[in-house]
Image (cartoon, rainbow, N blue to C red; front, top):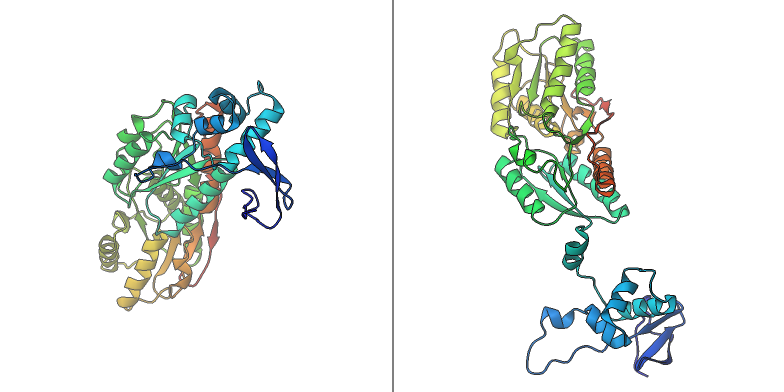
Length: 385
């Protein structure tokens, strides 16, 4: 007998013939106790195989099993109105014939693709890749695929990504906005429709959709308090776009502690920027010229905090001897810069996990509640602080 491979365990050593079923040779694998039938490939004469030739359809299974296409559909969709033995036989035959369900066709009937759309600013930045890891792990356990788009910190790309995902029959959308994003009409136009939306990490407070947030205000309070306890009185802060909650909340936390200690809030020490290297360097240079001089810098981005440390070293400014530097996010790059970066760990993987759980809950229940969940973080003190 020609060597036959079991489609379940892929072994060939202990395969036996097990009779003829509906004019098809049936086999039995003694290793995994599995019965199966080998499909005969379609014949093609004088032409190359097309995708349709290679893909098994329900009609092919019905023909091989000697039943109707409706019976095959009932078996593969676990309908109760079909004999258990017939259902088992059809499922085994479908596996043997390498049947793959047509997701698009199913989605047209069920209006569900079990797919989440995710838009993140970058895959190169650790905080976003760890969030994505959390999203994917939870989604996979729930049986959902993840369709990922990166905006590359570009507002126009974010708009285009949303439209592409919404046109691609996703079941729910998760979005972390770009640092440039100030207007949110591209989100507002989709609110209240069939597809639920959840914002995470970088969010807009004026949108009626659920949010999963870092502990922004409390985190900034803890960092500012720590620096004041270390003797700092002239603390500069580098913020992102004014339209994003992450900037607003961290600025509020910074203000709260300055006011608590009756320290003046100096507008010259507050900068909003897009975190490009040129803007970061320009901000630091402007701060170095101010009298009295600054003694600490808080950046709400670890990546920019690392750039600040490097620029201060190039300027021969001692860190932390003359200026202490603190970041947000706990990215890996903060551990390898010299001096290593003190930071506020925003627990980004857990943010991704909670965002994924929330969107799946809204998909399953069909109810889009306005949920706001804050994930607690913690300070990590290294050499720069």
